[in-house]
Image 1 (cartoon, one colour):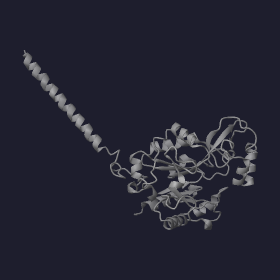
Image 2 (cartoon, one colour):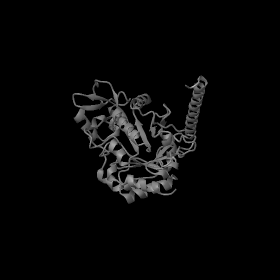
Image 3 (cartoon, one colour):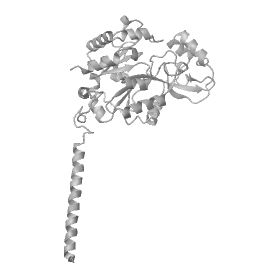
Image 4 (cartoon, one colour):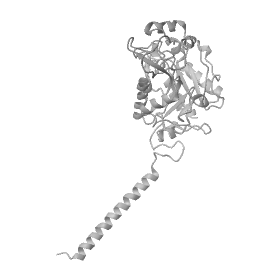
Length: 357
């Protein structure tokens, strides 16, 4: 029979072993926290073996040193029901899958009309009216909107205005903002090495945008830049999970991640109707704005598939992009096109991004 002091000694030895094991576990956890690479100590550092936008070489490049393939009127897709004069064939989900990484969107207030099955533009909620719209679109386009949905800007709309993605007139096509934001959230959730830029032509107040992004679960991904500091690298954005960059053309600044577009962006002129009218000159933004947006579509409204396919051929597109980069002194840019699937934009961006800088 074991003596009592032997039993006590056995328990003391066992307790010592448990304490040593706990100490080792705590030390291991502390070491893991110290060496955790999810919060990099150096700009551009990402976990070993990972890439940024599909290429490890891009991780150390700042946002303004990368080419981002983009689409103009990204939401207006002819393969989705209800669209007239669409600027793209495929919607945002397919665009992201195909390599598009910058989305140019317009957000308007609209009211769903059950009598016609169309969304009516709530011009009053936007502080606009029929006369202002008539100066923005051709009369032929306005007549079509009147015919399919009722006279634009006339009468009282019955229903609560909601944010929609529309090109000037929701009567000609509209996508609920909530649905398209959900599409972006799903993409970011499934592709952890990708950064997406969204530029908003805003006709609704920032509070409406904030509410929509919060409901979509996107505010966890948004990035906020300091205008007095260099832009972050892709590696920094990805490692910290800030992979959605949002700019507003008119009312940016609050919340902080809803950044004023033309404080950060300078772009090229709009309105070309022929290839020889495409220009690299500065249009909006200050000459010290750190990002370049190349507006690369013709004509503005209604869009032409054939003309945009012509300027989207690899040789022509590559030459134009390189010329604008050289003339404006940039190493990267957002390049926005119509009918992206008829162009070589994604391939050209990958080619130029792969080159040594």
